[in-house]
Image (cartoon, rainbow, N blue to C red):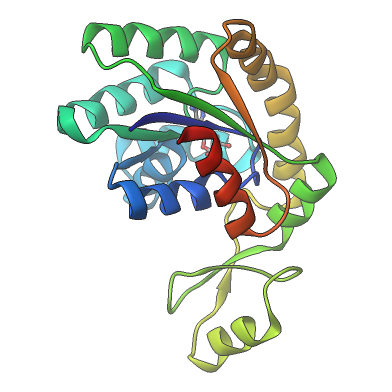
Length: 213
Ligand code: AMP
């Protein structure tokens, strides 16, 4: 499968990408994950992007294109790929088209996971990762038992650097200004599939599968 998952921050792209990876075996390429890794490892790129990411802006198109090209090169032609968090503006969408054309791997699905802005803010501001299991939890939505289990196992609830309210507002604003016009570009070209991203992870995944199968 060759698929792009589009959606605002907090729409559940990463979560649904994990479901697709599990069931279809196609590797996930998430520019956000790759960039956070670069920051954690304090690479040259990591140092360049750390501040930009913490305030919720987009990093340069050149940096993310390079990450995408290198990741695609490492993936076997036969198993497809799943892009999560890329592209995020019209320029990136055009670059991606050129890259995929040059390696003769056309996209099969471009799916938007659609979620209301108010829900996005709660999902992002409540998002935590359990430091002992790595599991993503939400202080507003996760069952109390899951949160208690994390703490009982000695884990801490870690918040992402850009999940504070200023960065969340900025990321949602950037999404409206830069990503939504790109989504229109896909919609006008007739290839956009839209999935309602509200409800449980399983419900959204079922809707997603019904679109792509
Ligand atoms: P994400 O994990 O997808 O929410 O991305 C976290 C942050 O990484 C974003 O707020 C941006 O600062 C940066 N980022 C991720 N993907 C891109 C992209 N395609 N273009 C520019 N910046 C990106």
